[in-house]
Image (cartoon, rainbow, N blue to C red; front, side, top):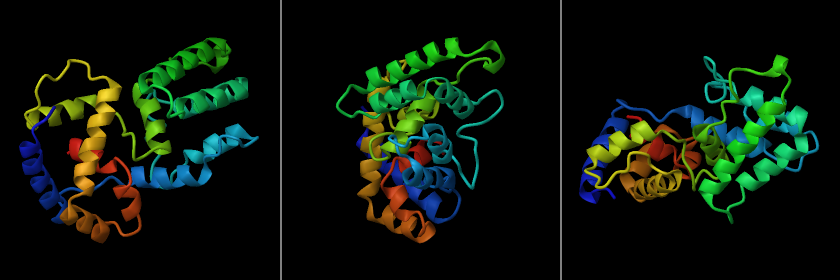
Length: 220
């Protein structure tokens, strides 16, 4: 879809920027991945506490909380309301034998249904569970397969890389495939690997084993 030659040019610029400290890899994603990996246990009896613990961070809560943005709080309400239904939702979402687009759309649909069941006193303006929030959870569960979703930044990158036939609305399946490709190219670059290892020794393996690399590139 995009020009490999243009990608290689862009990669050189990015690696130089990273090595000179003009650009940094956001530590939040590595921190979130480490914590999620330690805490996530879909079979845990106290599912609500487990879910809450899985999304805690020593750096920032901005992935789960912001101005009129409370997906974590809403999910905790859903768990309190229908714990086993939510457990099934996550099982379905994380089932790699099923189509990605179907899993994401089903998860959002069930969030819609659960939101309607909440008492008026427990409701916010919406449940906040859109494709971006769902994809963040897939990224945390399978960091080598999925990336945080940012279509606007991604489309800007595709333009810079002279991509052809870019659809107006990029499907998440296409987005995920291209992000995996970009991340693979980055992991194969020994200069990039050496810089990441030197700059981020504590989270080196986490960064290289995830699409943090690609997301950092497109958010530049």
